[in-house]
Length: 420
Ligand SMILES: CC(=O)N[C@H]1[C@@H](OP(=O)(O)OP(=O)(O)OC[C@H]2O[C@@H](n3ccc(=O)[nH]c3=O)[C@H](O)[C@@H]2O)O[C@H](CO)[C@@H](O)[C@@H]1O
Ligand SMILES: C=C(OP(=O)(O)O)C(=O)O
Image (tube, rainbow, N blue to C red; front, side):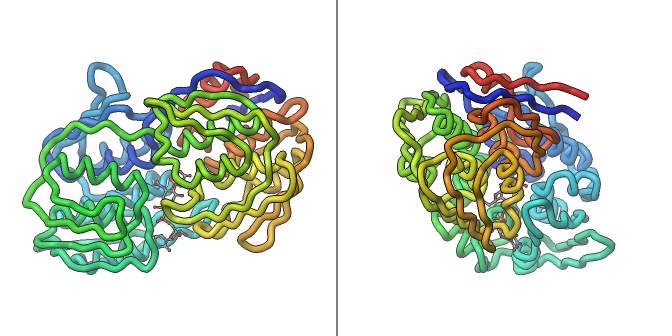
């Protein structure tokens, strides 16, 4: 298993290219299930989750072909040969559950493994299932699988989500594109990745309005057709490297990053003493003064994203004064705390809140990645720690960050990937 060896103390300066968004790209690939024509996606990030999604689509009989020899552009489409999403793929990547709605919509049946919990929480899928039932699906849980069918096709309805779930909104919006009549999703999630999905679905012939608001209205159509779509820039990758500039007192241009997608992250950076400047097709992030402690609460978009919580925990570990971070989205998303503490951070967790008392310095240590964002928080801490940090289990990072070592090394970090 590969590890990162990081020597702290370097100020980061230069440019980092922000790639296509994992959390948009995965759902956009799934949208390829909705048409027999080709959906061509560009700006595809080269990360493990995208490769897993390719395996899943291929298992359904859908072709996923590189365009002009490059896997940065994928041509997706074909006839559905199997409606089963097996346990070995779904257990690797929870976003696999998103094939359920599209399979039901196009093939009128689906057999999808239940994803189960993961390191950050139990993550049930009850809202996905109830919403699909409202659209007329018959759903039975058997042997760890969701067996779903809608022999006469899905039928539009009004669905009120009890919580603005990103995945449930995406599953239902995709299912509703091919349902008969009108579907309304009330309390829909407003994350920019859903907006990106809606743009693509509409380019494929869907009729969806309300993206970015809490109500999505979908008028079903008989069939979707092929389209070309460029995957939006990854706002979480962008926010993560913004934290790298902030924690090292550096100056980074994050090329391709969009300030409007960062929302509450910009405010939090500024309050903490990090300057954020929007440029044409880039965001410049720099810090010249001290880092200041702040309070953060994670919330659905446009609130502060849970996917940036761990990175801010690292940043605030070396800020002046105390900070409080409250995690409201996932019940177990503080696994980075014991690892950051091993590097000298002073953090106490009380239920869903963590109190962080800033320290003057962190020290390098052997630490372990536990999930995707937690892993990056340890890299951020390592960038300013005295001495050497060895980060193991970096397969978590490979799920969602492309070329972490090369991107960081190019702006001055001392980071090296080593195998066993
Ligand atoms: C691949 C992808 O895009 N993942 C993102 C997506 O995950 P995901 O789509 O899984 O997140 P959700 O918004 O659905 O989950 C939010 C909360 O709702 C709960 N819930 C969700 C569905 C359901 O049927 N029942 C239920 O109780 C979850 O357990 C969690 O506590 O949004 C999260 C919240 O912004 C991000 O952290 C993830 O990075
Ligand atoms: C939690 C995340 O992803 P997933 O929903 O795929 O686990 C994430 O991207 O931080």
